[in-house]
Image (tube, rainbow, N blue to C red):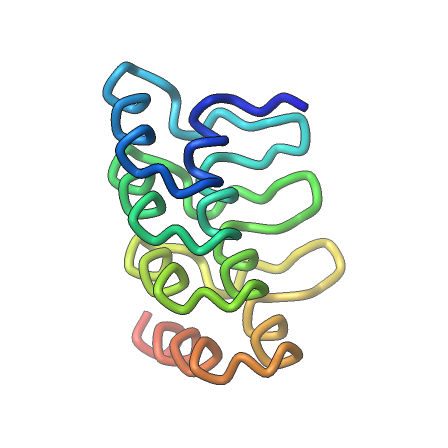
Length: 127
């Protein structure tokens, strides 16, 4: 599957393991066969603490996977407001457009995720 120990730790919200692996020199941006990074996995599963640790270690908040999703778009799709806010603070690009033309704002609107939509719009206006 191409899953690395860091990706599995991030996916399951094991913040302490994420820290240890990063401190041991694991690349925060190492991707699996779908180009999903540990940040994609943590964002999709709502693990805010792991997201913040990965971002502090230099994880790319704007890397798209082979499916076209950025960590921000995954967090929006899954309804993880705290993760969305952490990614925005780290410089995630709100206007990133997938190959099919979809942006994070569209995902929030279509999913009825109004608090997330408001956060995205606030960030877009301020940035």
